[in-house]
Image (cartoon, rainbow, N blue to C red; front, top):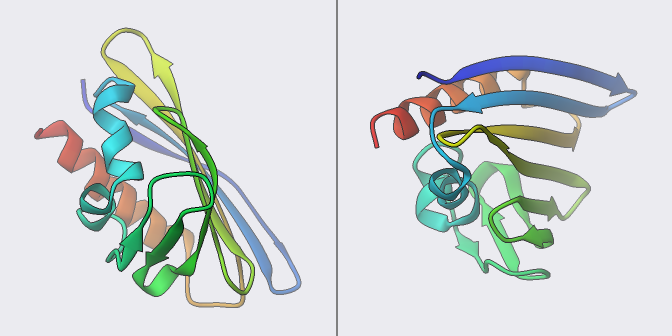
Length: 133
């Protein structure tokens, strides 16, 4: 089974943007969780990691995405990182049968500098990494 990336809704209000993606992954949740909730995992496909304290209210610094705090942490299911200046990324994992999972992703940010295409490229790297693991 290979992964697939479905673009969800993207909304813009003034300079505030919200992106949603639904990513089907060919691995069970336990294999995907480290990719979204550890420094090594995120650095492999998403962004350079300056710091990641894997717990609620832990510090997080994800390179060009920003620095802030862990604002949701439900082990093996939800990791949310909120950045100083008002940005957020949320990874929500769900089971998809016994051997696969679905990642529901939300990105909120202000201003310019990111695009749906940038995130699609990131998710293609994630699918590739998990497919070859």
